[in-house]
Image (cartoon, rainbow, N blue to C red; front, top):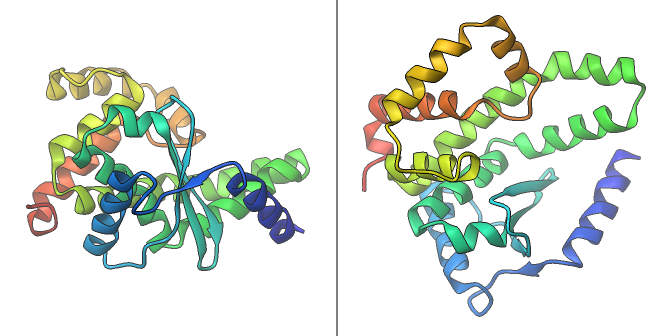
Length: 212
């Protein structure tokens, strides 16, 4: 039943989106090819959704994957920032996150409350780590740590001209409260300062994957 639902949702979504190509959104198409090449993976379809929000997501399962890019990203991000977003979504594909995230989402939304919360407790820790892993893929695709950080900031604060160290230090002062860890655990993504810290650590430890 879950598989059937995913296929129906796929047909409904794709019917209202524009698939990128050399003629339709050639900028995003070329960046997608660069991202896939740097991540050593097959180029899966990328679709554009007319929406001013800065968002993207990956859907599909078991080799049948596709990426949706909101038009707000195209209008507001630089090429290096777009490579990070594309690489992040492709990272979900390469590591097979998309399959399990889709099934977990189905189970949460269409089962009994007790079962849904049980799945959330079991899988949320893995889901948060999957986001960190996808961020690393985004950095490999972008090869520009500054642009990766600015892409994250644009998607959350809309401001990029900030003192990153002070931003993280201020967050760490408040995040000592256990409620912060609990709220992050039950969220869809790790908090932005934590994602930035993980990217900085990866860039420092694996500079060969992040250079031009």
